[in-house]
Every structure is written in C-alpha cells, then in structure tokens.
Amino acid sequence: MSSPNAAELLPDNIPALQEFITSFDRQLQELDAELKRLFAMEDPAKGIFFSQEIHLNRQQKNQLQVHRQFAQVRLNRLRLEASPF
Image 1 (tube, helix red, strand yellow):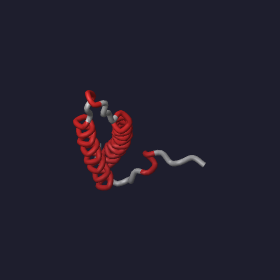
Image 2: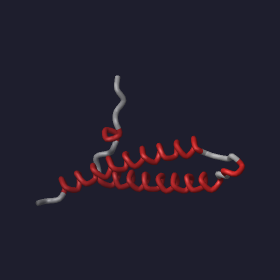
Image 3: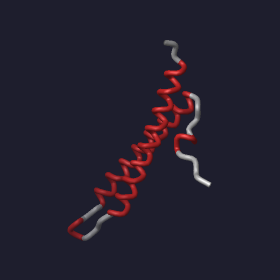
Image 4: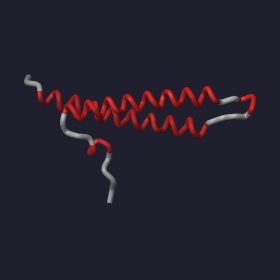
C-alpha cells in the first residue's frame, strides 16, 4: 500500500490553504533561525561542527518549500475556479 503524497493531504478550501501556507512560512522562518544558530555555534578552530544538523535542517527546509508550493498551486487553482471569466 502506498502512502498518500503531500498534494492529496491538502484541504480543498481557500481559507484552510491560506492557513497551511502561513504555517509553512512560519516553519521556514524557524528553520532559517535554527540554521543561523547552528552556523554561529560552529568553531572550526576547536573542531566544533554541526554538519549533520545543518544537513537535516536543509532537508527539512527543502521539504517544507515543496509542500508550500503544492499548497500555493492548489490555492491558485481554487481561486481561478472561483473567479468568473
């Protein structure tokens, strides 16, 4: 049995999608702040590196960006369907 992809889990109404996008934006900001913190804590002279944590952070950020794009595309589609031509 295959797992559902991100697009299948998104809501089909505009307000909920806007909340999803806002949530993704907030999470992306948190990941950016964490990445800056990790870089600031590194000390190459003392051999202190956080390469695994930085890599994981970047993977999470990429994943969130893709989920946000799916939500934005669905939001745009719903707006297009709702607006008269």
